[in-house]
Image (cartoon, rainbow, N blue to C red; front, side):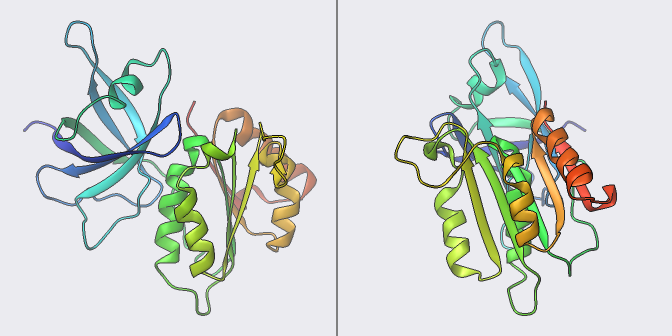
Length: 241
């Protein structure tokens, strides 16, 4: 039996360098993932008909309405054959699919406040968890928040949806920070770890999920453990480099 196939059914720009792809499992069966997991895709690359396997976090929560659909976010990397290809592949392209995989998923602490911390496309698995959590409604539920960092305002992924969620869900707070803000920017600036203490204290020492490059994840863990006295069991992390 061959690998499962996923077909690209829609694509859109999330930022100047990040493309959203929505894929459908060709067999019509559910992807079967938990929010926070990732999949492997075999991507055709130019030059001799080769294929490159790359892992991408699923950016969408499991859906009862469309269990065979899932979304990923792909950053265009100048020397990345797979990312360049995924930014060019047309709708209808079918890609071999392996997964889902991974253990960066919610545990049983559904009645405690949660802070998700992400940078760049590290937001993908966090968005899936957040989407799943918000679907539970707001009445009697704990506070939740997202601390997201990127370079510029144009690099805020799913920005419109995130702001809609803030308006629709009183228990959800959004904190964004820009590492390369415009001169007229009046919001937060710098890296996420610079704002971690403030947000964690506002949230009442929540459980923290962090996803991004290793340097950021390591610094988030350091701040939480050394400066805020966090137990390591209240810190969940995933790195994508």
